[in-house]
Structures are given as C-alpha cells and as structure tokens.
Length: 220
Image (cartoon, rainbow, N blue to C red; front, side, top):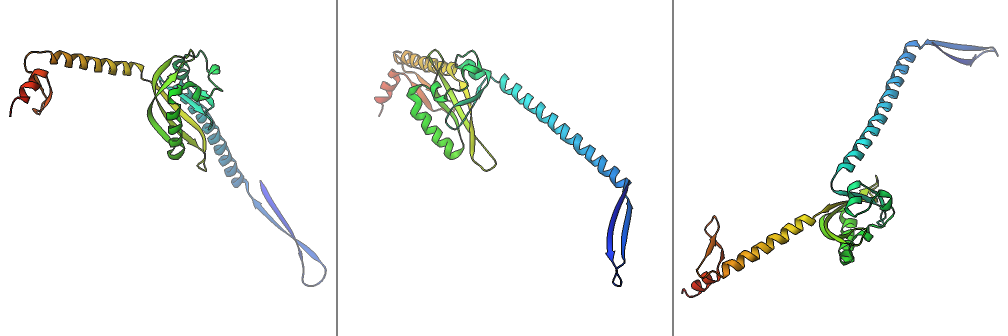
C-alpha cells in the first residue's frame, strides 16, 4: 500500500510551476492499524457479551433471593419487583404489582413513619431495617423490616429508589412467645413460699421471688 502526497510549488522566477510528489510505503502501518482495529472490535464484542452475562446473572440472583426487592421512581410508583416481593404481598404476578404506589402496601398506621424515613432517604441517601406493618393484597397485615437506598446518576441526582423487604412475622411471634414465657416464669417464681434468687455468672442478682424480696426488705 502506497501513500501519495502531491503539492504544486510556484518558482520564484518565471511562471513555471512544479509538482512535488512524496510517496510513502504504508503497507506495514496499515497492517498494524488493521490488527489494532480487529483487537478493538473483539474487545468491545467481549465487553458487550460480558455485560449481557452480568445482567442475566444479576437478574437470576435477585429472583432467587428470599427478601423482597423492588425499584420505584421518586413518587413511589413501582417499576420493578422480584418474585419474593410479589409473594410477600400475596400477589400472583409482577404485572399486578408494577404501577402501584408502594405506599399502598404499607398499613395506614405507619404512613407517618414512612414519610419520615423517606425524608431521611432524601437527606442521607438511605435508611436501614425500619419496622413497618405492611399489607397483603387481601388487606391483611404482616410485620416487616424495610431498607431503602437512592440510586443516583453521574451528577448526584436521585433517579430511583430500591427497597428491600424482609418478613419478620415469625421473629415477632418468637419474641412475643419469649415475653409470655418470661412473664409466666416470673409469676411462678413469685408464688413460691420460699426465697429464690437468680444470679448471673458475675454473682449479680438478676431476678428473685416475691418471698426473697420480702426477706431482704426485713434486713437492715
């Protein structure tokens, strides 16, 4: 491959003009440029494939999670939701969820709390593990923890919000059962006719029966 450059030059004397030709063999340069272009094309192709694979993998991961994940716009309209979120709220398909406002799925008793945390989200960019009473499609309520994070663009402006929903119904039932057992144990201790003290590993009294408390009250 030859590169030809031509330039017309006017002589100082006379009107005769000459043409200056420069011929350069650019075969090797063209080969190098072609090889570099091929490498660049292959690189972009690999990156495009990697991006597709990454998006597919991310989608599979999100769909396999047992916590509900949903994305809303700044007004709270649901744009995307995973399978766990759909099932948590008692829906049958994502189509039933998308387009709803996420506030519709929060019990009215927690709407004020929701607004307070949305204000925090606007200021700090997130909120974490806040307990709410949420709603199922049939109107029943369940206990859940919500976390949210703002998705920002390159200029720092919030474009959308991602919510994580964790059902804590069984945890709440366990906590309530534990409290009930503790109350029952305390009642049983209090009816004992003898003094009973519960001491921790450091030797501190952490609980005692009513009889024990009366006996201590009489000690000066």
